[in-house]
Length: 118
Image (cartoon, rainbow, N blue to C red; front, side, top):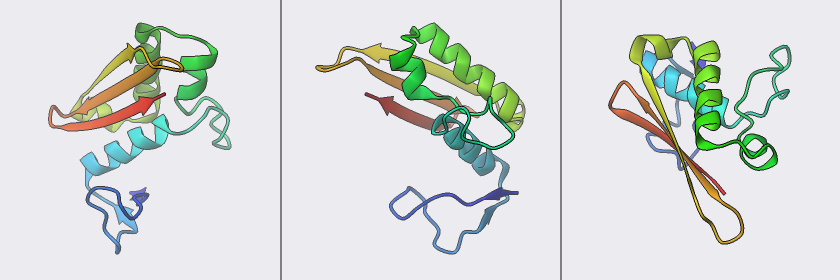
């Protein structure tokens, strides 16, 4: 069981949602949580979290390194990814102030989690 973390305005928001029992929904929530969590934010799991801002802008990782770091996080913290399969794609584009990272994670060949970091 996963806690329901969608807020008003999120696609498919359910005002009565408390928990999620559908495995694909659980996996999507796990990936979303992983992407938007910084390392050290989860008590007892200091390695949990993609730390996207730091990884992309402080450490200046390239696309391959960012992709590998996200894949490693999914492998460790999202066990349902083995059952449904995930594919991570990372692409950098030039921005006016700084580069923009586009991260797309395909789940079960039909769902997509997309993140822009700029």
